[in-house]
Amino acid sequence: MTKCGFVAVVGAPNAGKSTLINALVGSKVTIVSPKVQTTRQRILGVALVGESQLILVDTPGIFSTPKRRLEKAMVRSAWDSLRDADGIMLIVDVSERDFTETHRILNHLEQYKTRMTIVLNKIDLIPKEKLLEIAQTFSRPYVDQIFMISALKGDGVQDIKDYWALKFPEGPWLFPEDQVSDLSARLLAAEITREEIFNRLHEELPYSIWVATESWEERQDGSVKIDQVIYVQRESQRPIVLGKGGHQIKAIGKAARQQLMVIFGRPVHLFLQVKVKEKWIEDPRLYASIGLDFKSGA
Image 1 (tube, rainbow, N blue to C red):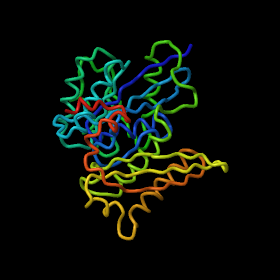
Image 2 (cartoon, rainbow, N blue to C red):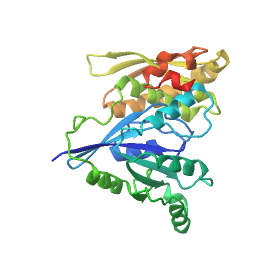
Image 3 (cartoon, rainbow, N blue to C red):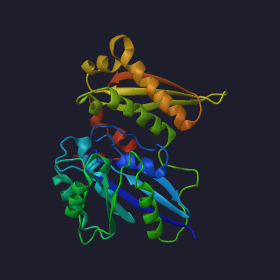
Image 4 (cartoon, helix red, strand yellow):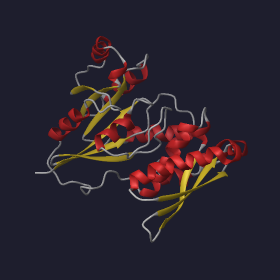
């Protein structure tokens, strides 16, 4: 008998949520960056364990003082994702020195009457004795299980899949067997380009950027031509993205194209433009395109 269930993956920014989801799914479905708040939207990753379909809800990082409209909408989206979940996984970066934010999230999660687990991530970065101390501080009566893993290395990931496979109710699968995400190819392509921007540009600039896939052309030779626009908020930001002699944008495009060819399994022709759109962060259509509530950011 098949089983199916939703698990919301939450945590403070940069805890390793997206890395864990990619590891559980076995394919790249959400982007990863050392910078905080890379994930802007709710993304579903689909993992299979025997007859069980595990639907993982990747959420933006939760933090207590969102300031900008986009940040507020992202945090609201993260909390909203918990409403209908069959289970919750709180991801903890054990290499952090201060767990105040994560403890605040954990205490807030008590109100959700659903199965709750904690995943202590990046365990390879600290001594074992310290890890046991941290685990004790996160123990709560409403926490069903505490896992200790390294999402990046894959250690302990299978234990999480096996756990949820046993806990889900019987029911039909909601996605075809070969589907690993609810993200469209156009959106995934834009996300991959945005990931490369996060990895290559510094300071606050990546947070002022939006990437949109403007056109998608299937070619007769089996390749795909993708045209994307990188929106920045100020004219002074445009030359930073372009780089001297176009060096920066060429590097971004090359790295994104190489990733996309692996993901899609075919040749990709990627063309990037940089345009200034001063108030893109106030455009309700962009929020709607990635499933965020524009009004919740007010």
